[in-house]
Image (tube, rainbow over all chains, first blue to last red; front, side, top):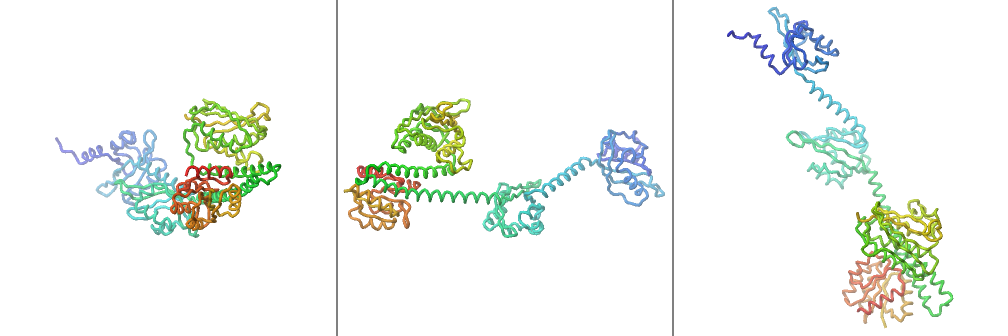
Length: 489
Length: 121
């Protein structure tokens, strides 16, 4: 068997290669087209043989530039180096190819053939383009974000790789100051948060949890930030960088602090008022009682003294309500299953004590152990305020109040109706009587703070209250307070 | 005759309490206007009062600290708190007070409480 020629060996090798190999004469006519070229273009060697590589394969956009470069290469004006060209496949798709060319000369040194060895880098190019687009998008977002965005490299060198413009807006320091000094954050951290930041830097995993830090801005003021970061690892799981988002929460902190200060002040004032006024009330009450027990006090004026005592007790009740009202907002909500029977009985007892000059007749169909509602210790307060109000406004010495409860199944609630025989509530007052706080109306006479308190308590329970006439259409026959309290599911 | 020691920083309350107790035949044997004064006076009292009426918020020493010191001197002392600050209730009872009344309190209720304390002693 004759030994294969060198040309034969080359052809075999070129056919089997996993790279693109194309042969062209000095005018660019295709003389060789390996299997890989056939695979990626869809053309066979026979289809392209003898045709111009420029018109049959190179895309229109690249054609002139590739031809020019090809001619200069053939003329020996440039050496063979790497170049890229877009090819159009048989079915019209575009490929991005990368080439190195080898020139074959005859004995006279004239170029007779050019072999290009290339790679299909379409996927790589697409990935690069996507990355470039995504980087551009990230930069656009980062550059315009209100939050500060940073990338801090830990390896091989500790340094800020990126600091968004919001950082300068937030701190007053230029981004260059961060780039120039990897420990710049240590310089501007608030002294009270220095140890926190140092321990976070010592254990970067701590950056992944949301945290709050204080900084000293360039103008000396304090900046509160909330940050959350992510750790970046290399392929060997080595931690190489941290990137994160830092939000300015100074305004929110200020508002929270202001609110807390206002709450503290309100608590202090209520406490002061409650304590001192009740001491004063004690003095007045005791003095009035001494007069009442004095055998020399004219009997015909005893009624006025009793009125005065009732007013003192009313004042004490108001103070107590204000304190309870304040507690409702402060005390954490912990609803539990409550049998309304006991709170109602305790409220009836308290209402009787609050109105010693009247006889209270309260009928109820609520039996012990019959219902369980979701409530807390304020439930008795709720009942008391409605009963107390009913007794207060009923001018009769015999006050009759009917309490009726029934389950509202589709609402999973217990409806409790408390019906009195007092003067009733006109329609125009029915809505606004509970909304003293919401409407900021502070001068409403009559209902006192009690019903607003009732509304607040029910709001805690997810319940509601409304008022109807005890006798429909005639409000003068008394009111019907209808309460809905969520039942145990 | 029942004897009583009034401890309160309000001078006006001292006057009305004294008038009322005198009217009801109760002997006010001592008065103090702060906790520290109360401890000093109590140490010198012989015989000891049947009842101490104790305020909570007072200058120098509050009613709870005063109660602890008096109960140390005399564990049999009967202390009834009469305060406008109901948040002190648990502390007062823990310190050894027998009862805790919230101001303003009606005299009838106060007398009832005193009677119960004396009956149960």
